[in-house]
Image (cartoon, rainbow over all chains, first blue to last red; front, side):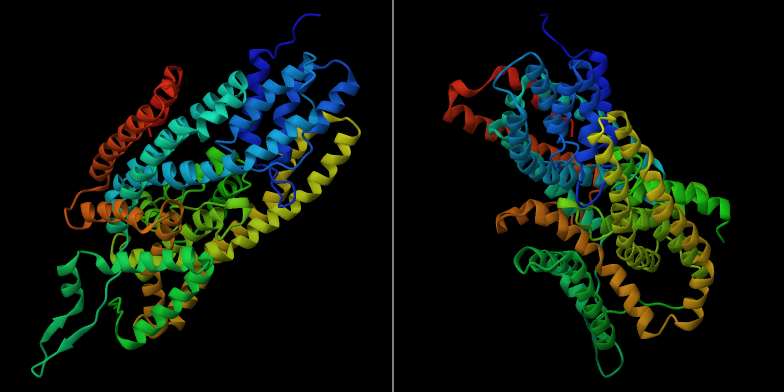
Length: 278
Length: 285
């Protein structure tokens, strides 16, 4: 019997099914399961002629799946390779090993993907794009649309194919030492850019001042604070919000509600005054 | 300025494409069309005022710069922020006669958008719940070995969920926008405490977005240093964001090389030459 091999065309179709459809039919119960089934369908169709074997293969992917879908393309690629091995009669690969692998990988890949792709790469690109949007210029938005989509499409395609060719070795690279060095470098880059973004686009200012007998302001708090570290009030509020969420387990909604209370109290006490007029 | 039915329907279609389980897919839908900056461009084109759209989009983008949805829990819905919040904020700015690049304009846009985005999570759960129906049908088809109908489940039927929970709410909200904005304007005076609070909240809210991001990258107090370094570059040294990114990239290269030196020292044999292709790819970021 000739060795079965997934054709280039089928592999590409499987990738595109994942690229587009990973979350299109999202529910809290099954999340990316249907996206996964759609991605494996062309591969299973090509590898098996026997209807029972086809059903056995498809049943494997009925198990719950959810991860960061973009970096997660690597897992889908790895299972494409495993399915090919199973179709060629490799006894070590069965539904259980495939699902064990999927369940074992989706957690770590979600963690890395959420912090690296969604939490770092996208904010960096958005930060640069916002820097290009001065005066309402559409350049920034166009820059983001182009760069992000080229990066996402070719990046996902690359790791999907790597996953297919190299199997679990590809994943080991991501969680291994070199992957770690890259992540640390990118995280620092992200941290610095986010600092610059918050100094540029966030502005928390106080209107608190003390007035002397002749009506002149002799102590303007905002000026004193900026003399210490420009924008310090913004940095303090950001770090306060971080502290609430990271150390006190506040949800973002709760923090926002607390800010509404703080804003109200600040306005009443004269600490905040947006200086509105008609 | 008002929004016509056709404009509202176009915005509703974009709302269907974006969002978390959006029909444009994850990369194009959620992470491109769903971002408020891109939403600002699209709303600007549709409503005929690109600069205002972009500036309002930028203001809201800061709040949602790190919209990570671990395990599918959301604190805001991008379709509501980008295609209901931005058009309404644009209407409000015009109505109040505020410039979109003034501090007050940004604050008004931010508090409007965030309010809408938070309420919009209802739309997210609505879509996800309705998708359960299609998934239920999908399992039956899989049981009957009608595998090709999976495409129907994953790519066609969710349109019904989105017409119900993205298109129609967007159209209704955009059309109701003008009277509601006028109502707020006449009932709440600008120099009253509620409006002052609203504007102050608008200035404070972006801090939450930045803090969500910091939660991802700060593990110990030392990790605040890169953040404050970037803050200093912009606030004290006056660098713009593109220049600050170049400085940051320089530091990233230094850190990467330092780490690699450490690794080489620790395990000379482990340095695998075949992995170099990977590095190049990742460095493009």
